[in-house]
Length: 156
Image 1: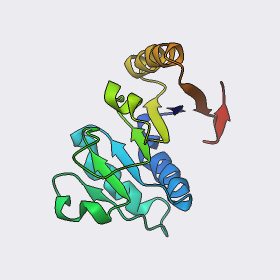
Image 2: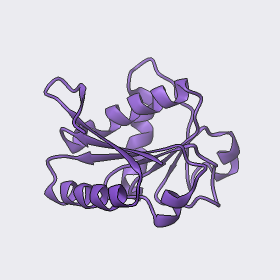
Image 3: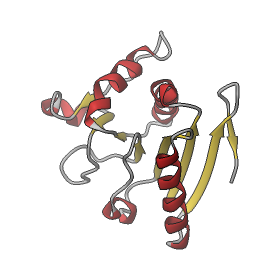
């Protein structure tokens, strides 16, 4: 499985970065599950609608749009249950969320994105620990960090 780590300049950049990654993923006609703490879901939904201002990314939120989840190519949730919601090809993890072992073993998932605040020592440590464990498990890993202009620079 291909796992990409994305080190953000700050937590405030999360919504805009997520919207850009979602747009690229939708341009590739992928279905995406965004896994984030429940407290972030409403603000992420708002960012998806407004970043950039002329974008439109159809999505739903677990607990609010459950009746329409089969028609949502982007699904926001606070867990990564693979059997209960949409069948996503890409998974994106934000905040303190990381993939469960069954997600890592799921061959139907093409790519995982781990987005984290690089200035948060706890998140940085968790990302480094996950990197080591997943590298030993044989996953394909990539590491990107934002530069001062917000562009992505591949570090590994």
